[in-house]
View (cartoon, rainbow, N blue to C red):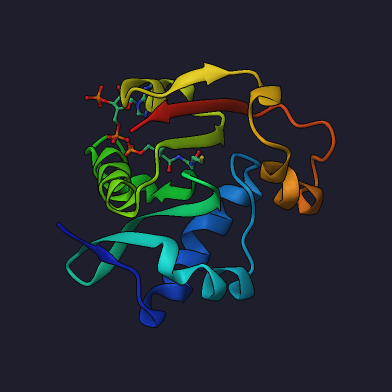
Length: 150
Ligand SMILES: CC(C)(COP(=O)(O)OP(=O)(O)OC[C@H]1O[C@@H](n2cnc3c(N)ncnc32)[C@H](O)[C@@H]1OP(=O)(O)O)[C@@H](O)C(=O)NCCC(=O)NCCS
């Protein structure tokens, strides 16, 4: 398995992976436009030339970043690919001087196993909600807010 920063060549595979889960309602859909604009946020896991996982660390505010666009191909679940991607994202975050990472998720067991703690959404700065207005679930979000100091 190779873990590396995403490149333009990966965008179609990332798009398909993320939007498959988005159709199932477990994560936010991402347009190609957004994927291009945030390409530098993202790490991918590649095996035999195929993208099996993706995740992004998006800077939101002073020393604060969001883990998002995290998805592992169904055939590759529970091989610690998701955990490894988050680890790479956190290492990059530390190098940037980020102190707190958060996520909005239904995968509380996964993020809990990595050290994230559940918080109330009100604990996160208002700027976090900028992207939420584009979500079909807004304003009735039932995702769990989780954060970790790194
Ligand atoms: C969440 C997701 C990225 C996890 O990826 P993964 O590579 O399968 O997870 P890992 O193998 O790294 O799991 C690490 C640990 O998390 C926990 N975990 C992972 N998936 C879990 C699940 N479905 N139920 C309970 N615990 C889970 C386990 O403790 C696991 O360790 P273990 O297998 O040694 O017991 C993957 O399930 C996924 O893509 N889901 C759909 C998209 C999504 O919900 N993304 C999150 C948006 S924020």
